[in-house]
Length: 420
Image (cartoon, rainbow, N blue to C red; front, side, top):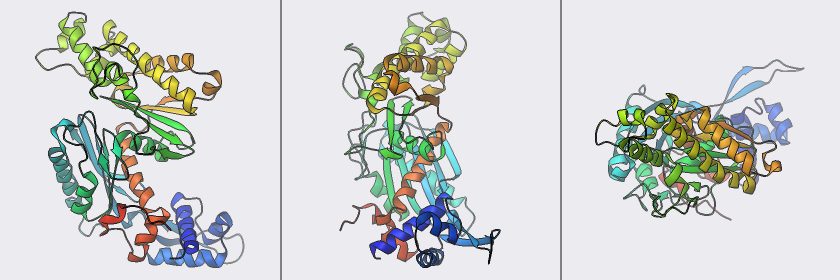
């Protein structure tokens, strides 16, 4: 397809998908394309079953135009977000709406065969539960809790994922479901989810900070996810914040933010305090050899336990210092806080906010908002859907499959984008 035709096709499709234009006259007016070009591209998209005509809208004179609708139900996406201690899977439509989902505990350290095997079982179960004759799988989106080389779709030296280094996650799912697959860091997907359907929809420059077992950031720049050259942008959990050599991080270094302020660190510190008799509440929770978790710290703080409150405030201050560096360097208008520790309550969020505002330049914080995620645990699933949607409907990818009607059956679509 000539570049000019492809460009017009993508423009028309994007305007209808986003709801910016719903009729042919609106498409011509908003895009600047001629009516004949719009009519040709709309016809092509209707023939491809990506668009359909619906009822006519009220006319301002002459024949009433027919409204156009993007057929989000034409295909479905398999999406999964893998965390350190849990996984969530689902099916989404082509508009990024999560149609069905399932969450359960999991141990990412069990290795790729065990974890991904379980993900496949859950995917297969969700697909089997659909009505017969359901739409084909158009793509798969997977998030993992570690650095990912996005172009290759493989985790690279992930600190908390033994056995995953270089594992061909993308190829595994693409081959199994005969559809293109994309893999990204889980925090990037959470940031993308917030950008598309969450609090960051109107923020051109934003930071999503996940505070769970580990700590990581997803960066939104000029309305787009910023991954960096290899996909490692935003890995703030391994920024050194103390010189304490006893604070050993899972990455092998000492003094990392994650090692002193992440969920795993809070659980470890709470366990030590319980055994030392520094917290009656936490000591009562420690009933056996199993260590405490961050949820125990959050619960203890909610019950007014002084030691737990101190732990959360100190964690918030450490995180706030690192975040202040990002704010000064990057100057976002919005910071969205997510992850399991983010549910610790207003005291924790207040400690982060106070530290950021105290340690950042006045100009950088003049219009800055620091808020808790509105999507919660579903941010990553939404992001997994949109990473696939963005790729499938990008000009280069669309050109590869549009004449075939659908990307189903093209697992190699994730290869290097065509050039020249």
